[in-house]
Length: 201
Image: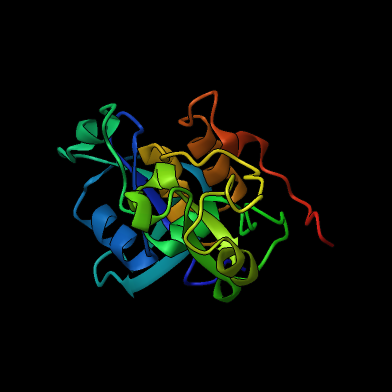
């Protein structure tokens, strides 16, 4: 049984990923006839009241991916200079909860945001200059660059595209949603080759 907090992926008519919505929002979009088409698996089978005339009970099937009508300004997010909002949760997701210095995987509470080029040396708080680091590695590196601290950076930080960012924002992304989103990732996306094993296990 699918939990009620399972997210539904909302797209525009062209299939551009827009956002995650809950089943209540998805149901409202269906009832307002804003859903142009749906794909993926059926997540929820909602049942309503019984029609007094037909004696039939209303029902609504909500799929894992819904395409909606309207202008969503998604084209702005396809521009080359687009950068999604940066927060620790999506940063840690981008880096697969790995410390980019020691290579071990940690829960979010044991990770921190490290500026590759330190802020004290003019480093910006931008996707291309930040990585996930465990508290120990971050404290050891302190206000130095990885080179001056004698530390090796295990992966080059990158700015996610809009589709990659939608994936990083997801909670409990289902297989069909993952497949749909990956089709929108650049071929060079590091997310394609994400490891599923903990290198420190």
